[in-house]
Image (cartoon, rainbow, N blue to C red; front, side):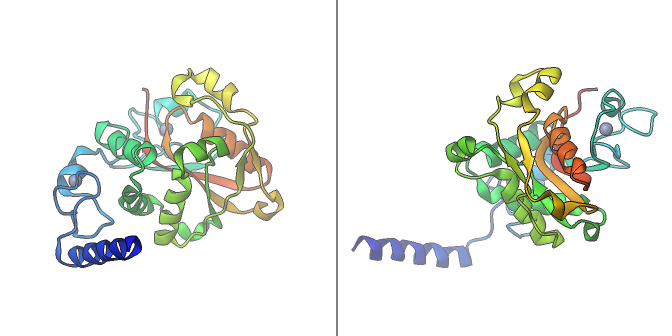
Length: 243
Ligand SMILES: [Zn+2]
Ligand SMILES: [Zn+2]
């Protein structure tokens, strides 16, 4: 009886979805900008700040000055990747979308986020795989999903680059958000290992995370991937610059 009831509910929802207009996955009020569930509405898009013009090649953020790279990257010479892509500045609008995707179980947000990220990857055919930054299994159990893997799968849908779970987190770490820059580096050191490193020798891979702040986590992952012989570029949804 119960199963029949559930089935009927699903059937009703299925038919309603056929006739009701699509809603923006973020505000659930306005229709998506292009009518597809892979996009936010115009109001939500306007609340986010896209990185315009020529971005900083090292972090994907804004140049913010007269040099070839941004002040954050000038102050941080130790990046173990070559090039980075970011969609947004980490302003309130972008932060709200990312937080809800990451902690609010709002998995529908992955579709527009993945699509927008795919739009900034210049030559997807260069990459042999997308490597999401992994969660420790304890945090995975708390959250029930790894947002970077979901994002990777969505990015893969648009770019056709396969996703590989190349990194394994061998140590749980404190939340990076609560730590100063130097402590972040120490906190994350040795937290990951590369699975089957021989498979990525000489390959160009796209390392993926949701936000880049100081870049300590990405730098640690990129370091061990380059040690295995890979060439690493980075993709994030938002870049949070400090200078
Ligand atoms: Zn909206
Ligand atoms: Zn930069």
